[in-house]
Image 1 (cartoon, rainbow, N blue to C red):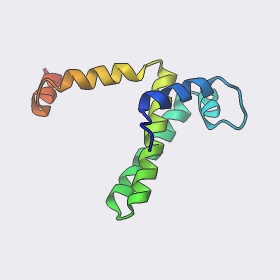
Image 2 (image 1 turned 45 degrees about the vertical axis):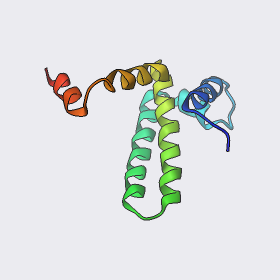
Image 3 (image 1 turned 90 degrees about the vertical axis):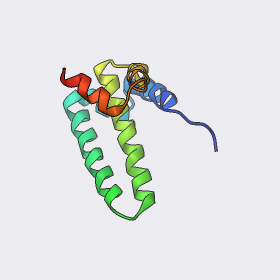
Length: 106
């Protein structure tokens, strides 16, 4: 199995986003804007939660893939590179989750 990464998927999303290809779901999401893409992300999040509560691991894998894809589309529409999110995650690894949450409140 190859080492496919979120960075590679981000690149694919970017290349398809403005392609104008009527067969491209990514192009359609971009054309419809943030509201539609964000709603789709929310739908996928709910479907992932439902799958997580079930016993079908294939469904959880599939819904997780849909969730990650739609999350990257939303980030791209917002103009936020994946590297910004990864940098924030890296920054947070220097402290415990409890410390990080407390810092947000202050």
